[in-house]
Image (cartoon, rainbow, N blue to C red):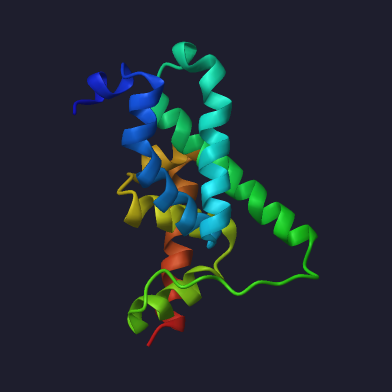
Amino acid sequence: MTAAADERIGFEDAYAVHRVPLLRLALLLTGSRDQAEDVVQAAFTTAYPRWDDIDEPRAYLRRAVVNASTDVHRRRAKDRRLPREPEPVTAIPEVDETWAVLVRLPVRQRTVVVLHFYEDQSLADIGRLLGRPAATVRSDLRRALSTLRSQLP
């Protein structure tokens, strides 16, 4: 599907096409399947009433998921009394080790890593999505990779 065709699809079709990739993004950003479901549902719920006015639905939904995932982290920071262990993404030990280090990264660095490596977004696109200069995104990525290298065998 071309980008132009993707942008013209109706709400129900967009839900069918974009729900699973957005769930994966939200899971990688929040570390919780339940919160990922909530984040994606909220993104679609807020988009529905104004669907016809949204110029780039896929970009809008991705931004909504990233913003809502950031809100999840803010709420977690306020409520440290109930710490939760992150859910493993897979049973493959190497991936679980990577996941354990990834979830300890600061939220901005983690978001950049997930968007760049899992969502295959360019640094310029990530910068636009997060409202940050590409050079800052590049620095966040460099710091995150340095941390990952130092903490992984």
